Structures are given as C-alpha cells and as structure tokens.
Image (cartoon, rainbow, N blue to C red):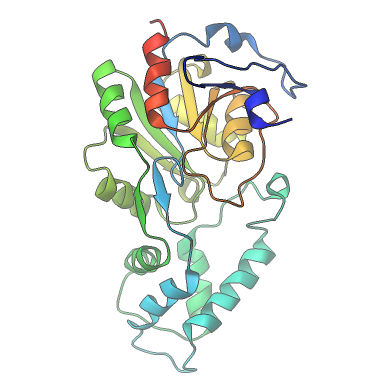
Length: 279
C-alpha cells in the first residue's frame, strides 16, 4: 500500500483523489468531520517543509569552526571532531535508523558542543550561539521550499495564523535567525525549537505547548511536515489535522504514514485546498 492510498491526495482535477481508512492507532477521530473547515492556524515543520536544506556535511561545519579556534592543543582535524560527534549522537540515541525507536527528549546543542570542544581542549572567543551558527551555515545551507512564500502570503491575507515546531538541537534564537534570513516577510507567531522545550515530536507535550501558546483547540489547527512519524502521526495523536508535505523530502525519507492525512507535493496545492474549505 502506498502513501496515496493512505492520505487525501490532490491529483489534477480530482482534488481529493483517494481516501483510505486503515487501522488507526488513535481513538478520537471526531475532527475528521471538520476537515473541510478552514483552520485558524497552520503550524509548520522547519526542515524540508518551510526550508529545504542541502545534504548535511558536519565535517565542513567543523572545519569552519576550527578556523576560529584560539587554542587547539591536540591539533585535531574537522574529521576527528565529526567522528566524535557521531559517536556521541549514537550514544544519546539520536538519528536511530528506525525513527519509531528514536528518543523523544532533546539535548541542547550548546551542551553538546561544550562537551565536544572541551574534550579536545578547544577554546574560542566566540559565544556558543555564534559557534553553532557558523557550524550550521557551513554544514547545511538552506533555501525556501518551492512556493512557500506564495503560501505564506496567502495565509496572511486569509487571516490564517502561522507558527513552527521543529525537532532541532540548535538554539531557538539560531533557528529564528535562519528562518528570518530566508523568509524575511513571514508572520510566524512563534517558533518552538525542541532544544528549548525538552520534548521532541512526536511527543504530545510539544504539540500541547503549541496549542496553549496559540490559545486554540486542536481541531482548529493543521500541522504540515515531511516526516511521516514525527509530523504526520505526531500531529494526529495530538488531535491536530495532519498535512504530509512531500515536495522537498530527502531520498532516505521513505517512511509512510500509518494514519489518514492530506498529502501534497506543492504548496500551491495547499492554496487550492484552502480555497475549497469553509469558514
């Protein structure tokens, strides 16, 4: 069974081409009858949803950081630093090959890089936040996903509020700066980085926090993301209507949702869907 069978899918003139009811692992599906109502807020994932990033190159990021070291007593290379970072991530439980077995608690990058750099005796004049920005800018450059600017403009004019929830170890300030530099005209009400709030998607806690900040009921919100487990299934379990965005998915992201969702490949399709909904 493919994703098209499990999600509402737009396909040419057939706006909702396929709808398959499979064995869902949730009990409260009363929001299903409200699918065609306009949401009061749409919350987005960050990576490969709002912003598409180039393939991550940790060694390039570390190389840029090491150029700034005022002390490197062991003359460690970027490759050595990245090898230790990979070991630490594995021990923490990050990036498990089976995402359903991944951890739901976030380790803040400032503490991660503090261990990493002090292990090698590295010293810098830059702040923790400055170092992580330098690392990120060189390890994973980003650009706006296709037609996201058009969608954001549409949502603003339609009075639909927007926000972000992201599974990310980098600080909230760094994430906000990245989004602001790429989408300077956004009207996001808040940006929740898991690094600042302990919990990672799909844990209900981070979705619940977003709803409380928005002062909205789950049935009044849609959530858009590229990851079937963290985003689609996580939002569903929180009672939020899920949208599976497949327009910028990485090749290794092959997991299919086990819940019903709206599946789209282009943000212009999202505008078409919203145009058909009712207030």
